[in-house]
Amino acid sequence: MESFSRKKFLLTSGIIGAGLLLPDFLHAAAKSSNTKKRVLRVAHITDMHVQPEGAATRGMANCLHQIQSLSDKPDFIINTGDCIMDALGREKSNVKAQWETWNGLLKNENSLEIYSSIGNHDIWGWSGLSARRTDKHYGKQWAAEMLGLKNRYYSFDKNNWHFVVLDSMTHVPFGYTAKLDGEQFDWLKEDLANTPKNKFVCVLSHIPILAACVFYDGNNVKSGNWKVPGAWMHKDSKKIKTLFSEHTNVKAALSGHIHLIDEVAYSGVNYYCNGAASGGWWKGDYHEFPPAFCVMNFYDDGSTEREVHFYNWKA
Image 1 (cartoon, rainbow, N blue to C red):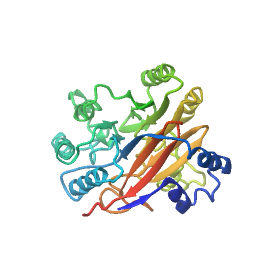
Image 2: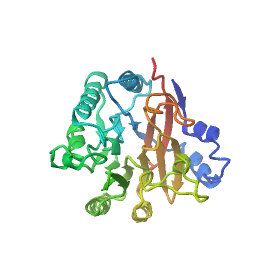
Image 3: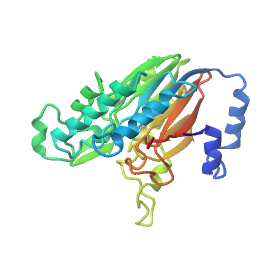
């Protein structure tokens, strides 16, 4: 298993050379590193795309084993969705088998506490026949039940960090777009307003609120202009960013969805897009990135550091 510290990853990926992280930021981080204290260590998994067939079951079991075998053990796991291969357009019996595989893996291969969000591929029927709308499992309800969620968005506290779990997906004809519905955005505003200013905030979403890697996923410059589809990054990113700017204790945001890895530091918030446990859907690498999980270190000064672990999924 190959582990990259945040500093090594940034150096090897060329982000520092590209000027996306300013020297003042690096200097401040180095200066504070001598005094800050780690208060949480959290494994982040995303885009597992589990199914009974193929390499997914063995690969995901290996991922969970290697997380739990780390010498510096995580306190718990964050899962930002796409737990199963696909429910959007699959038949009910197939989706049932996928969820049984997912929950079997967690029961038999994992002993850590896990907090989950819903991914687009966890939603049943949005790309399929309208007749499914009459089924009680249609949409997000089934995923919420399988993940043990009382609500599709929620928050929780751990060691002076407040974690906000969002639902990225809004239904459009034959699919989804990345946007918070009005009810959820109002809840987010209230949740942040009620969080003490001395408690730091990390926001979790399946689809990135802000990311750089979305520019490289697919042929999105074929028109001659950069174009990021609304299903790849939050369409309401500016609105969410503006809300974050009103709460300076919002320090980090974690996501998946793109199967690529990046970090964007913008206006006091570090946005981490943390790859995919399945890599290229259990067929190897996706672009430059093998199957991976990340470990996030949270500190008492509001800073965060990421470790990227490219793990042995074929073992």
